Structure formats: C-alpha cells, structure tokens
Length: 283
Image 1: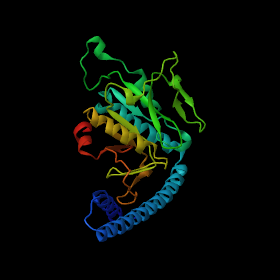
Image 2: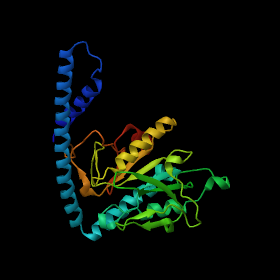
Image 3: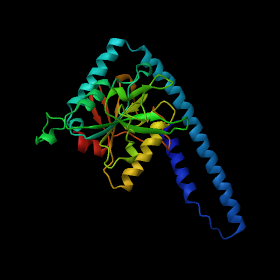
Image 4: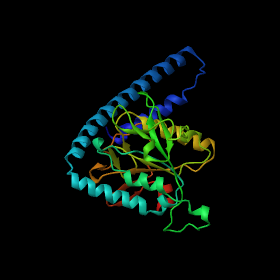
C-alpha cells in the first residue's frame, strides 16, 4: 500500500463527511448516494489492503525479533533504559503511563524504568530544588486490558506487588492495591500525564507505529487526547521504545485513519525526536 493510496483514502473520508444532507432535486439525491457508495467502497478497499499489509509486516517483525540473540537483546534493553533514566525529560516528569514489558512478546524491557518510578523520592517535600541530577516523585500508571473490544485502562500502581498475571501471563495491575484501596484510573486523575512510554512491533522516523493488531493503544490514546483537550492540558509525549531491528524505512508501515503517531523513539543508538513537541521538550 503506497502512502499516495492511503492519502487518497483520507481524502475520500473528508469528502464523505462533507456530503450535504440537503439536496434540491431527486437527480442530485441519486448522484450523491451513488457517489457516497463509490467513495465508501474505495475506503473499504484501501483499509482492507492496509490491514493485509499490516498482518504481513507483523509476521515478518515477529520472526526477526525471535532471531535476535538473547545477549544482544539484553544489551539493547540496557542501553534503551539507560537513555530514558538519564534523560531530563524522564527525571522531571511527575506522571507517566508505561507498559509492563513481556519477554515472551519480545518487548523492550521496562523493568528498570518501572522500578525507578516506584522508588522515586519527592525532593520537593524536603525543600530541594530540582536540577539535572535529581529525581521528582512520580505517579505510575500501567495498562489493564478490559475486554476483546480494544478497551484498556491505565491504573496507578505503587509497588510491583500490585501486578498480577492475566490469562496470557502478562502482568497487569489489579483493581485494588495491597491495602484494598481502588487503584486510581488515569482517566479520572486530577492532573495530566507527562509521558506515555509505548510498546509496538515496528516504527519509523516519521512517527508511524505498528501495534500488535488489537487496537488497544490507539483507542486509549485517542480517548486520553480528547480528555486532555477538554481539560486544556498539555498533551503528553508519546515515546516508543524500540529495538534497532524494529525501525523501518519510510513508507514501509501502512497507515490508516485510526493510527496515532508517536512523538519520539528511544532506540539503543539514542533518542529520535519526531514531533515539534518532542524537539521542544526532549532536546
């Protein structure tokens, strides 16, 4: 699927949304209905083709990830996490949403990042001024899948003991913490998230992200983006953690209307800012 075809699909959607429901004659009605049907069919074909290309690319990337030697993967995990932990944008963040990595899925490890968030000290409580070497206290939210319809929540955890394995043996937050209190849902929090640390199967330097096909992150990120707009909050940075093998050339990743871009990548070779917000806040 070429980018030109996908952009054509976007144009089709715009045209569809602009069709006027009020017409002056039966011939215009007939023409509008036929045109809308043709446009709808074109969009359907484009999305079907993109979906097939995504499936093929996912299969290819999964094979490549399985072929990476364990010692190389560990090295890249350590390099990526060090880049995050040493960065000012991470140290100065107060609220983060981050995934709990799953080794079986060959996701970039986040264990050290999560541990640092959970062990962070509130220097401000003791009157310390934040500098490049200090760490501020953080609130950490991690994903919990609700159903098979792409619904996911981000719940706060205060310790790794708040995580339990789901049916897929992936660690998720329980609904209540160790003291029996409800874990805070980030959608109900009174303050904005600074950073989303995101997983994925493939990325490119234009910010496109290929997930695993469930749509959970795209749906959740769209909801949070709308919430931030309603509350007039600054949008959080969407930062993807990626192995070297997961970074694709331009136009390799199919793009559809529901795909949200990331602001930056963190790979073993360094931070790759993409959006203006990333250049402003991460460099």
